[in-house]
Image (cartoon, rainbow, N blue to C red; front, side, top):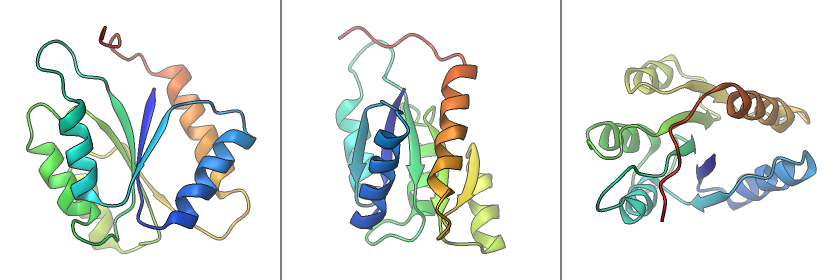
Length: 141
């Protein structure tokens, strides 16, 4: 499993990566700052043939240039990118944001909080997900 963290707040991005290390969740993490960067990254990694590497995307909603909902819309309309798994990780508790995100087939909507165990719960979820879900084989490069 590879994680693409789409997060414009450098402090939040570093805190999450630090929590991964502290909880021995050793997965490759790539960080980009907005939806445009995320799409560019995914398109750059898209193979010319064969199966694309799957990313589990942790997506903030409130970002400059291209917000999370705009990113989701573009992702789901791209035939070669729409298979990626997305969890929204945001401070927005607005019902409109939740509805818009779920309309784009996200796997879950998680609220950021100031709680000390916030990342612990997220890591537990991701570890369980990784151990439970069967993924197609990784492409041979």
